Structures are given as C-alpha cells and as structure tokens.
Image (cartoon, rainbow, N blue to C red):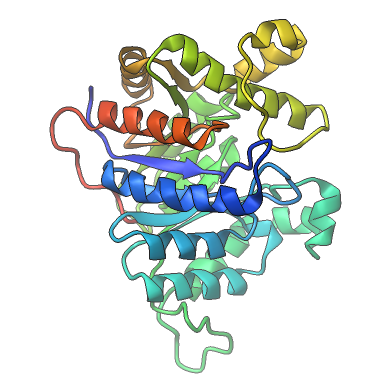
Length: 339
C-alpha cells in the first residue's frame, strides 16, 4: 500500500430508528477512535433540512469533536460559504482555533448544502452569494490575518489565527479558484466524480504559490469494509438507498441495509447511485486494500479522505478501522499539510 495521509469525513448520519442525539454521540465516539487509528483529520459537513444528517450546526459539532480528542485535526468539509457572511465564519473558526490551537481546518464550498427553499430560510440571496464566492473567500482569508491599523471591521477572535483554508468542489470552478489563490483543494469525488480527472489536472497545472507554496490535492472516497465482501455490500446498500431517496425528493434518515438491493430498487435509480458512488472501496480487508491502492495509483492524491454512511454504528467503526489499518501500512508518510 502506498502510504499517504488519510482523513475521515463524517456527515453524522441519523439512522432509521435512531435520533439526532444518538447520531452526534456516535460522531464523538468515531472521532476518538479515528484519532487512535491514525487519521490525520476529522471533518464534518454543513447540510440543512436533511433528517438523516445531524451536522447542520457544523462549527458547534467541530468544537465538541475537538474537545473530545487531543491531537487529530478537526474541521469543516465543508462550510457552505454562500450561506454565511465571511465575518461570522471568521469569528466562529477563529474561536475554534483559539480554543484548540493548531488543530482546526476550514474547508469552503460554493453550494448551498440544501434546497432553494431552505436556502431562502437561511436569509441569504443564494444566486448573488454564489456569484460572490471568490470575493467572499478572499475577504475571509483577510480576516484571519493580523489586523491593519485602523481596520474598520475585525474578527475577534479570528484575526491573526491563520486558520488553514481549503477549497472544496465537484467542478472545475473550485479547482481554478484553489489554484489561483494557492490553496489546498479537496474534490467531492465520493458523490460527484464526473469532473474528477479534469479538476485534478486544472488544479495542479494552474497552481500559483499563494497561501501555500505547493499544490495539495485531497481525494474523497467512500469505504464499506467488513469481514466479508457480502456483508460490506450489505452495508453499502444504506447509502445507495439514501442517495436514491434524496435524488427522488424523499430525503430521510439513513435506511436500514438490504440483503438484496437489486431486487428492491428500480434499476435505473440504482445505476445512477452506483455511478455517483463509484469512487469507493467495498469488500473485505483484502478487497478494500486492493481498491484503495488502485485509487491512489490512478489519481495520485497527496491525501485521502474517507467517508461511508453505515446504518449500524458498530459496523461503521469497524469499517473505518479496517480502512485505517490498510492505509496505515507501509513506509512513513509525509506530514499532513496544515494549510
């Protein structure tokens, strides 16, 4: 196995039969284990009006995860900046960095992380906000710098904290922006991989030293690992169902797994879900090792971030433990980038 830093993206899934309180407790438990298993980062994502995701108040959950752990970097994968004024995010993440120095990451996305009705409920003009994304990123970066004399608006806490900022995306727009500003870049290949190869090429070929001096690309991949491939495929069926439910306008809690998803699902919808989730590793330990190695060899990421919506919290822990054991084999990695 080629050794690179590996991280974890948690959407705090709320399983059918469970509650948001249990989902958040499961997140804290997984984070503590992820730290022990050698994951470099633990990221949480902003989504709104989704019954199956408990991390809507992302900065609050990040604070709880950071408090429950000791060394792992904790951050947002990501904050959907069109939903917020840059000053608010600078204050929130400046506060987190002040409380947990050297451990906080801020990944920024351009999508609303919700539907248009919910976007309006967030009190922002979404079309205008999305158009302003580059300007808002630059404004936010400035708020993390030391304040200038007589600066009229300051982030307190926030100024001088130099919180590491990442650009997240699933299109060429984010790749171009990250390259132009000299920022690390993470691609949402775990659910929208169509532009992946082109985005990697754009980012690396157009990168200009800025906030960082070298490009740093993170590949997102799903993982469902278990003792047997049959069980891993069963675990995967929960996320396949969730994807189909979301795309057909029926979002809900994370469904229970199915023994035979093909028999229970419209083949057209299942094919669409499988295509969207194709940057994945699923199976027993040997199969997952082979598939992760193939992804690393093909895409040459500087870092991987793994995710996987699994209904049973114990099975989720085991899946990420197997993945960490696989990725942790081999020579010592280069240090994970802090920015």
